[in-house]
Length: 277
Ligand code: NI
Image (cartoon, rainbow, N blue to C red; front, side):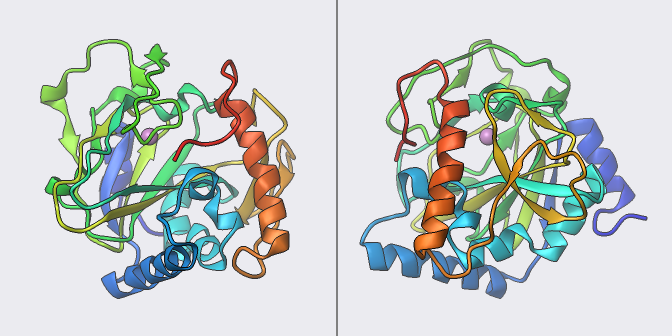
């Protein structure tokens, strides 16, 4: 019994490695989440950045609500089954008329997760039209092996290491994934993707929420994750607590611990110990 995705959408995910658009909430509901993010940014006086862009569902009650959104989980359950952990959530924000981009990459490159039963629900909290630099995929690339990447640490690259695929990508086959606020795309951890700059007058705000079933291992470190549906009878991950209040002391402590573990995995082999802006 499928809960959210049609048989055709499940088939497309299997064939292409991504599926879109899937509407999980109204534009108004999405705007509510955007407002909470931007309230936080007004209070701190800067766009959300560095470590605070990651594992945001441990910091903010509203982001935890997004990671547990029943319609998002229904869609993910249709692909991964009934037991789901949220491994991380990361804001990918492109400011209006800004050169920030994402190079061609496979998410699996530095994550240390095995096997590759990992999907991302990319939640559009603003419209993400073609001119905003939406995610762009190479259909079928989720069936590639892990391909070599090189680190660039390019300042306008939104990825943790500015990593890019070190082989030629046939961009003529690329499929852009424009979304409206309140829609998601879902992609496989091996699907090759990237995105260009935002040339519109509005911010393009996406929250990438990464889900795994409990049998997926973290090979690089003792990691933590949050059970968001079903049961974890395997115990590969230390459980993470839900935030009780936005960025209170307990939430910040839990977030710091979880992010430190993730940094160990993502930046292994480098001397970096904090996320880039
Ligand atoms: Ni990615």
